Image (cartoon, rainbow, N blue to C red; front, side):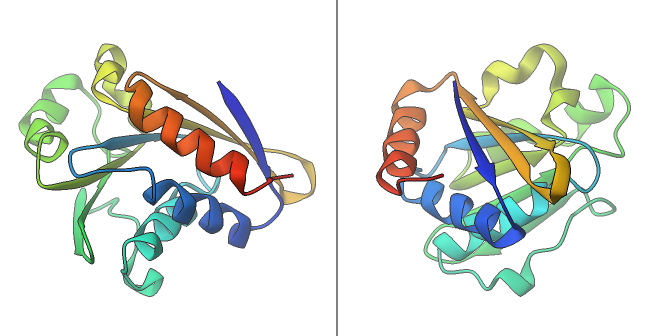
Length: 157
């Protein structure tokens, strides 16, 4: 597990952008954090890292899934409004997880026992003074280790 402190929303985007360099098609990132924690800011950084304008990225709370195309496809999933595992199963999430892009899932904790489907899990906690603690863990050690090495190279605070 690795922890980074983001001082600003721009820092959070920078972290997301760095992560894309370690990801391949078919990799997934799960995001956990309360409302306003910065999950969408991290997704904006991921999008920027694969050539997508960050202004195109919005939280898919009502549509559930947004698809963006840059150098790679980015599937942005939001499980906030889904209450049960059955609701999530009808979404066809495995098609996106096994698909032809990178899949990032906000409110990944709603996957309950299926968190093993996620390559890199990021928990975001709001700290005093609007800073954020990002805690990284992962089941897919290859993608996770590549991401950690890139973040260490950044000589992050």
